[in-house]
Amino acid sequence: MRGPLPGILLALLAFALFSTHDVIVKLLGRSYAPFQIIFFSVLFSFPISTFALMRDRTEANLKPVHPKWVVARTLSAVTSSICAFYAFSVLPLADAYAILFASPLLITLLAIPVLGEKVRLRRGLAILVGLAGIIVVLQPGQAELTLGHLSALVAAICGAFSSVVVRRIGAKERALVLLLYPLMANFVFMGAILPFVYQPMPVEHLGGVALVAFLAFMGMTCTIAAYRRAEAALIAPMQYSQILWAILYGALIFNEVPSRTTLIGAGIVIASGLYIVFRESRAGASDNRPVLRSRSRVATPGAMRIGPLMRLRRGGS
View 1 (cartoon, helix red, strand yellow):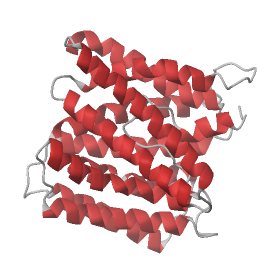
View 2: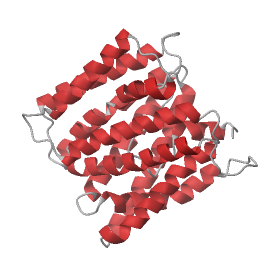
View 3: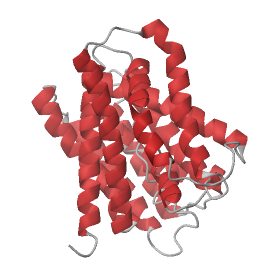
């Protein structure tokens, strides 16, 4: 196949894998704390990650060039992982995705102070409309707002911040630093909390966590392949296909039927996100293109970030 179609199909496959990843997290979340699930998913991902990182032959140490930004990004990545896993555990999948879909809007917003990005009237209005969509999903004053809703929102904010920081320091920071620090931080932090929340896991549940790590790796691999075969403006919108998987999995496995309000709010958020993506793809519309350059997906602590890994595979440091 020629043209962008193979890249689009690979992106759709990637987000199908990520959605399946989230279903298993939700199932495990009935019995285990997010800290335990993340710890073992990261543990099982280490052998896979090691093979990926062996490609880096640069003679250099792992000392960050921008330690404050690296620490800030690492902390936000850990927070995003915990909050996203908790949100998947307690919220209907469609509700969790509808809130997490705000990430492109938040990336655009955070790019103003972090990257010095100029957001003009049209993108500014798109941000406001998208945030209004989040309010529609949350229904403050009409529906009970839970810790799960707050967790999903914090996950979206922290994930967006991580992406913007990578955009700021990625050109000067060694790719291996950007890949290893969040992975190790998740492992160490979750390991420190594990004794306080640990519940014995039967073999089938350990297998489920191993499958979470494998699906995260395969989703990451398919995403990299997709971005190599098609433009970012065509690949980025494919993340919204997860709402279809949320409806399907929710109905078949969890007996969840998304409310009309959730679907309307999700539609508003998706429309705003699509506008920002296509607006950034136009020449001269953005100096940084923060959304289009943010290839990673929230809520996969067992997988490394796409951008730095692609740079590592190209032979960059």
